[in-house]
Amino acid sequence: MSTYPPQMDRIRPFLAKNTFLGRLPDVVRDALMRKGHVRTFAKGDAVYRRGEPGDSLMVVITGRIKLSNISVGAKEVVLHFVSAGDICGEIAALDGGERAANAVALEDCEVFVVHTRDLLPTLAEHPEAMLEVIRALCEKVRAGAAIIEDSTLEMRARAARGLLRLARQHGRAGKDGVSLELTISQEELGKYLGLSRANVSRQLGLLKMLDVIKIDGARITITQLDELTEIAEAAASKS
Image 1 (cartoon, helix red, strand yellow):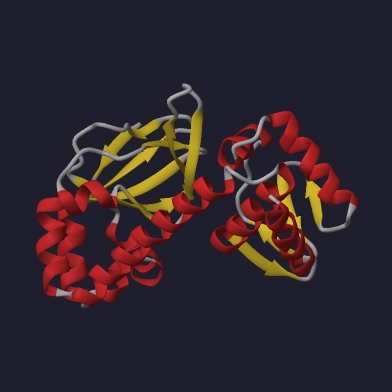
Image 2 (image 1 turned 90 degrees about the vertical axis):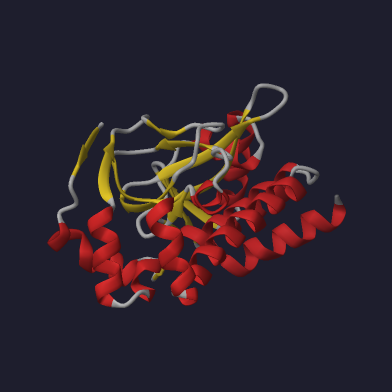
């Protein structure tokens, strides 16, 4: 892991086009970027841990980060996956409290870090940018609520609903269907769905047999989105 001054010419276009910073006037965005810095994390590094002081917000430039917590049963529960253009750490950055989850790099990552002391005055003066941060926070809250709700469902519904949720957050439409631009192991997927690795493998295999999804290594493509939605709704209604 290393910390270095932001390479302004390289990251400015990306941040302006793909993040909430694009809602800021150029001069304001550049001033905020000069106060921030870029950090890199190797795969498996802890970006931050739950309970740590939270004095900054992070914008993912490259790579993917897993947000998770540990249940009372000492099991890891994956809450969200964030990728390029997404933000993390916004809860603590906004309220000044502790980090609410653990953040771990799923692959080599690069993030832009802006401290609360610099961020909040800027957001207060530019509510359209503040709304983007709030929308991102609301998305995580909704996803967390869905995970809790899905935990009461039988495995087929849980798998189907989880895949649909990932498709909305990380899907890319193509000629073969909606590909999940998120390459994770079945073990990590199980922590997100609340299923064991064996049950994840079983449910994915069944969905593959129904020609609803296609699996290529660790990459999943939803080939029949409507059918997967029907499976999720039908299975959920029986639970």
